[in-house]
Image (tube, rainbow, N blue to C red):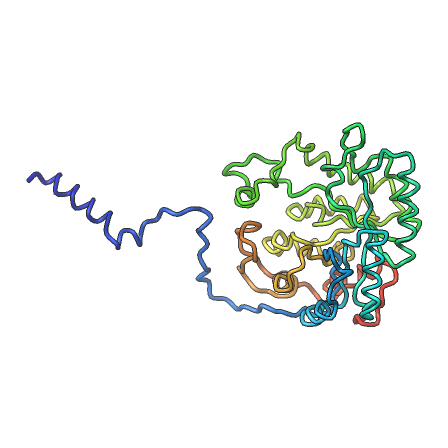
Length: 366
């Protein structure tokens, strides 16, 4: 028997053996998620160091919720107050406010109102929307939440996309300034959603698992255009306070975000769904918070109590190289910022109390 034939047979036999199957390096990218072998101090926490205000939460049926259960969950993590951005407006908002009063939690739960852009082409849309805003504030709304459909999918009767800075909306933003309520607005999405879906895209795994999130320069327009529309609107209404959701999608470019905050004194940001961006750049993030800590609010977005623990760990601890809770959002590891107490207090509650009217400060430390 020829030696080469023997060698081939041996290799084939090894390749089909159980040992070879166990050591086969081929693996789908989605499956590769090894635990870290790094041995360093770990200080996970389930409770925030200071009582905090979550300015970005969604509870669609709060008019029917068991609020005792919600408050118990908030107490467990030291959340002093939660802002429900999904108030709905009008009678739906009234149902929410009535339920909050029934349970006696007016000092722990507040709601923002929402408006309907679907009839923007109607001749009485502006007047009726302004009347609704005034009514909603009278019954307890503390702000206005604008969802990302403005700029994405809101069209007028002519089928034209309604831009974020559409002049037909100017009376709404001006009225919010007059009423003294902030506007928390979500515009655009992560910039990577507009980039090619290939090996160079940092959000490749998210776009693979959630393909409907993919955008392009024609779906609806370029990312830069959406962001510019939002900032045009901020500059046009200096007497209205705006909270740009998700750090205005600039958490991965904090120098640029700082420039924007310098240009627009009425602009604030919140950290909902971008904590992983901050956690991978602890030195840069610390520099940013040292300078702009009075412009950043705590927000979470999706309400899942166990996920708040990662926010506390990033903001409060000096831990190294720990994971985010959704790998498709962030496949990298993070580091704690170990923020000073005065900065933490600003982010956790002081900034929200300055911007959102009528909050009870008795439950928060000085």
